[in-house]
Length: 490
Image (cartoon, rainbow, N blue to C red; front, side):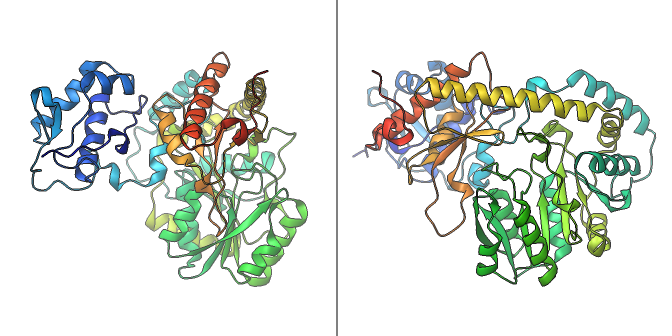
């Protein structure tokens, strides 16, 4: 007797922008479902025609995926009885997808090999100065090709000097090139800082809501994150003092809070600096997109404030230029400078010298400041266009949040599932709920980044996303009009 299992219990979404072929993705999802017993022995799969129709692919694509699994001994074709999971599974089949997807953190599944519409953390790919960067990089490759020795583990001296000059102009930070450590991005800089502080077993304040990667990094470092709420004035410092008065550090995004986009108010900045000095704690300033503040001039960095000797400033060029640049930086406060430099020297490696050399030219020749000005104008236009489009479609509760637009959903709604499903349609909204770490119920919603909004297709993209939300909410028994304030047609 065969087992009938509803196909709906097997989640299968495709990433059409990813590196894996559709055949491999379909086969991988089905193999994972078999390994995890979501599709038990004897379960019947949809016909080629039905599954192809559900996924929006050619029948030949589904047929090739099925044949691949038949060749591996996982499926068998039973004629008029359809294609079924074999009765006896091969030995060694483990509950991990064929591509190892089960080993990857959840955050990985919201990434893509190419920029998707609404995807967070990716600059406008159509505005990247590709020709200019290619020329600078070619020149840099020629200049560095004859170097036979290992480069300075802190980064090229020329780049550290260029970064120090830029920070003095754009972020108000006075530092020497010797205090600048070149990294491969925010995560690398955060890892160096956490190792240097050596706060294993101690507590650290994090923003709630806040960047999930920061929370994961703390947990992997043996540091206990303490979720401190964020309001319209940024991190509620007084609440942090109540929850964990003797925490070893605090990690904040004062220049443009992620994800809310608010600034840390001056009185809160002063209170946070005073707390760190009083307790001999450290502040890690994640300068997340602060240079792309859309409401007037960007405020100076917290590391530029009076008394900020215990602030470690971390920045990255990957979110302002392009991820392929792969370069960030850390400004070491003097009391911790030697320790930070030791960690960077012995436990990490600097980025490729050619990329560093190209960035030196990009900074020194003024291209970076001009690029930032263009991006502020472009992102402002795209955010306004997205808000207008959503309003025209009857969405009243969409709210600007820095370089994104927040679309709220009913609390408890599975925004992560919806975000994964959207990727199959070329859309990359980020789910809001993973950004909450406190004991309170996470808020559900989607964050629509504006950087890669296609202005000519924005209405079509919004309609597709809203249609998916509408369908998901109706399945859940709640109407979209109630959930996000969409007006009923008159």
